[in-house]
Length: 350
Image (cartoon, rainbow, N blue to C red; front, top):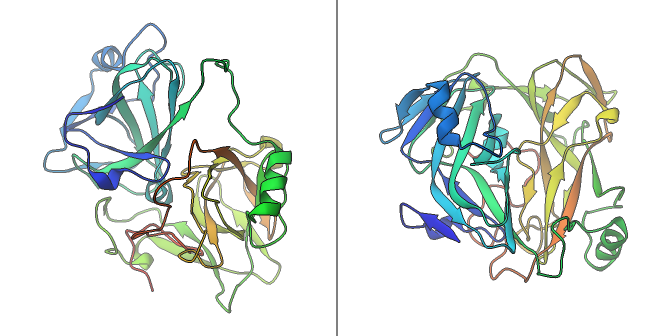
């Protein structure tokens, strides 16, 4: 089902997902697009007449621009298998908007059963210009199996009743769980353990970030620290990007995975959803200790918006796996297991 022009690297395989790799070229386009049911990505690119960048030696993707990159991996799915994609955690924390595109599709990040063809990543850096190259990994894909007796509209998400039962058996958070259309997450805007830094706001004018570098960049060159206020409030500036943390510490049990989904728009004029997939084992077991906080990538829309400490800011929906993975998240090296408030792995820690 998974094809590749280069041999797959075993480090691409996560407990419930597969990292996808950028191919050899990037096409700079003037606008985001979907091909539609009657067209291919290649046909749309021909119409848009994009600039072509070689990624063999690396290239810079400029902030505010849109790029389409053919991926090294492609798919040949049977009728019983579909796929969905998310940005990787490190991608979301850099405010890089990344979505998966397939031929003859009317939606992003979804691969229909029976699909045979190429995969493409649409990439739009929002806060920082980034350097990428062939083999860089910005998004990931996971697969869903539907039996012949299940209709195509089968919902894979666990119900609130199932979540409440799971929480009693294997706690999903370090405290009381608020379950309403999934597990609700509350934002932490007060100091913890004498640390008054409760978030970061991206600076507007910075140097380039190489997405394949780890522990290289100084935080103060790219981010402004946000210090807790006595009233536990934070005013989000329009079109600014923030990294915050949840009040809850999460435990993702071994037999389920979770995804952060868009919050109800009636609850606030902001977005929290960049890299919202949690592999089984996140914050769970000895490696995770007391759990791992969810890092929240937040962008306000057109108007300033006041966040209050412990305000509900996101929600997780859960899905059962077909079986428990042989290796859970964090069993080997992991940048985010046991995390609190944490920027992406590209920045020097401590």
